[in-house]
Image (cartoon, rainbow, N blue to C red; front, side, top):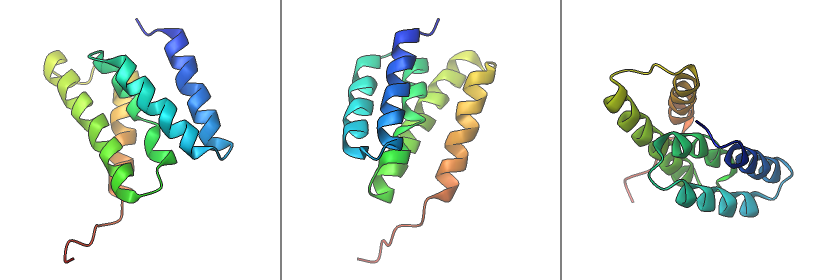
Length: 107
């Protein structure tokens, strides 16, 4: 079962980012990520939103990869993506990861 207070706190962090306070939103998302601990579903919920408030593409990608890692662990346990909420999160992470610009590795 998803903790509704936890979800509300994610929503509050999203609102901070939408209001332009991206730094506070980043701090809140990092706190929520740490608070979620080993709860893979809560971590998946948290990792869905921080890419939107990152300043650098590499940081956005790092959050996308965190989300993918959690989805991989959840699906390995369940055998497939059986939850519509999880399937939606997985699809969103894939969409985000394909939008990231390539990094210049020549330097």
